[in-house]
Image (cartoon, rainbow, N blue to C red; front, top):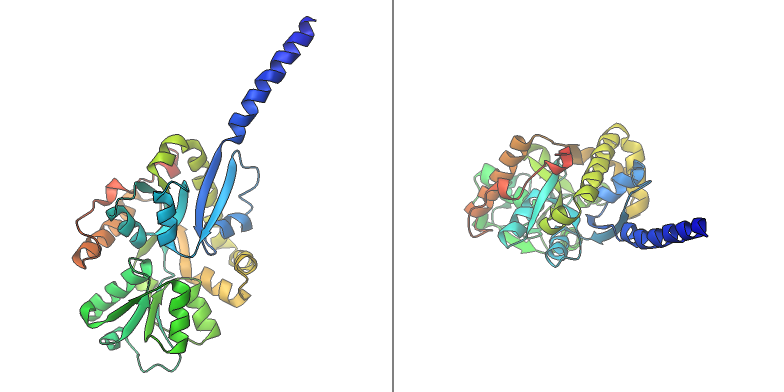
Length: 306
C-alpha cells in the first residue's frame, strides 16, 4: 500500500511537471534563407530542450512589427531596420551579431548606369529604412550625390527586382537572395555592394523574452553561432539547404552564401561602433527623428554566456 501511494504521488508530480516543460516555447521570426536554413543544414536543431516555433517574413519590417506586437520572441534582422524600429519604440536588443556583406545596388543588364554617380535623377527601388536603403544612402554620400536628387521608390524586395526587370525603376538597392537571383537569372549588374560598406545582421530578442526566456535564448544563440561557423566551412552543403528551403537554383543559393559572409562578431565595442555609425547616419538623413545610443539596444553578453 505504501509503495502504491508513493508511485501515485510520483505520477501526480510528473503530470504537473510535464506541462511546465512543454510550455517552454521560443517563437522565432526569420527572413528567407537566414537562421533557419543554416541551423537545419548544420544539424543544430536536434535535441532542443524547448519547443521552437518558426515564423517566416519577407523582410525585416513585418518581423519587427510582429515583435512589437508580442507575437515572436526573437528574429533575424539587419542593423539598419533595427535602428529604424528602435527609433519608433521597439523594446528589443541585438543579442548576436554577424558581419554582413550581402547588400548591393543593382541595375538591369545593358543599363546606361555604370556608377553610383549616374544615379542622380534616377529612380531607385528599396525598402524604406532597410539595409538596402542604408547602403544606397551611404554609397550616394561617398559618391558625392545628394540623396534628394534620387527618386526613391519604396516597395517590397520581391517587387523591387520585378519592377527593375520591367523597366519601372532604374536601380534597386537590396540584399540576398534577391541580389544573386537578379544577377544569375536576369544578368543584373552590381554597382556597389556590402564589401565596401560594413553592415551587421543580428539575432534580436524582445526585452520581455530576454527576461522570461534567457536560458532558451542563450541556447539558441550558441546553436546559431556554431551553425554560422559550420556554414563558413561547408558552403556547398549550406547552399544545398537554402536551395531546397527557398526552392531556388543551386548556383543562386551558393552565390548568396559566398556574398553574405555572416561571420559572427563577438567584439562588443566593434559591433557598437558599426551600429552607432548606422544610427548617426539615419539621424543625419532624417530617417529617424532623434539620436540613439547603440549600447542601449545592443548587448552581446547573453550570446557569450554572461
